[in-house]
Length: 91
Image (cartoon, rainbow, N blue to C red; front, top):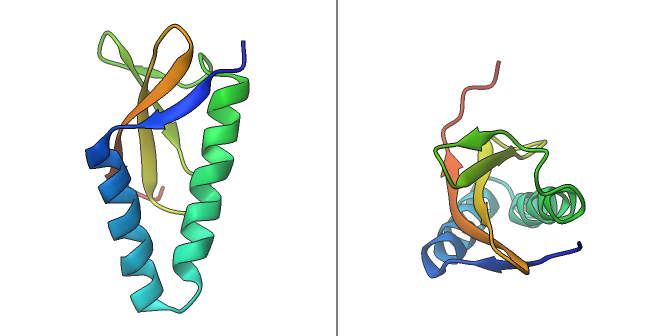
């Protein structure tokens, strides 16, 4: 099943804030951040159960380029993004 992605309003705000922050660091970097989020979203859409569980109902997908994770829950017909978690260690 190819679910649509819906963001919680707080997750949407976190996404916009992070993109703005990266654009202040380097022009265009915010767009790269959003592209990375879109790639993570597409991977979630294609294989929603492949990311590890955190807690009983949530999963966490690490973004490829930026130290963020997309925290989401699977609902009947959609992926509900709960948060963007930053500050992940880059090991």
